[in-house]
Length: 321
Image 1 (cartoon, one colour):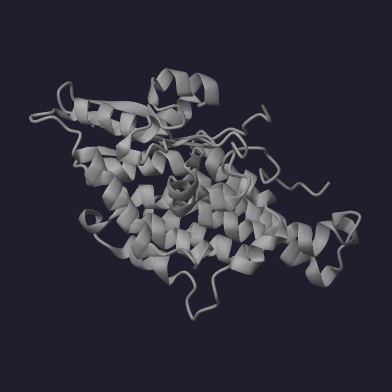
Image 2: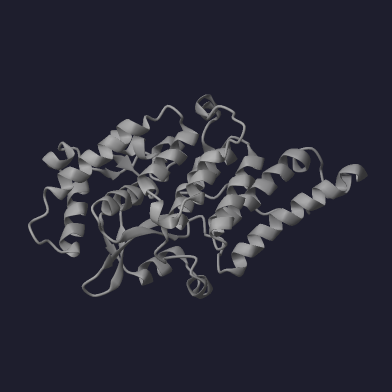
């Protein structure tokens, strides 16, 4: 037996992008001396200086260099100003949060009568372009990556204590209400609120995962950047650039050693190398030439290693459902 492990074929919101057609190669970023320099630069910034709008657009432009960062930031600023204009004098953060969601999902002059909604034509973000914030602003159709990121970006611009959080194969927002000193889950795909227990039940989050804090915790800005860079991991995976996929995963794991998504992407990258070099060429491991056995064993070991690391923190293979 080959003994390989992968989740690339799983139909989930984060891994669906790996099935993107080869036409994506036409809009890949041009080669440069250090293609990962933009991610390195973001992660090198002090936490207080990290701007999630800038970070998201920086990552997105590594996927689609045609994105106009200045114009997109302008759109975000305009939308922020229109939402802020709706705040009544003396409004508390809870009221502001409600108005933020209403301004995104309900039609009105604040969004040019074009509310944002879930993309029922591509609900899992199969087309990786649909995970880019510029696409979401243009089409007003989003998924569980673009939707919570817009809520958090706008919320932070409005001065709210809001950040990203994750569940298996899912991204959500966390809002801190200073009046009861509690974090509240904001389910951006529906524009409402949701309990931790609901996510634990629906996504099969294990007690060990909760104990280790790999899901449902409010993320630091640096860790939120790691979530944003998850789309880049997917992009490199579907482009067959497994070495870059591993290099990005290493950067994210340096910033957040509990980033199980980066671990799984790294494990998947080793599986794809195994597949390309050996699984598609030989009927069994025994047929691999002796000169290549060490390389095969190294790839197989690393494939299993990174899945095992994620499992040790409480990750569990999600069901196809």
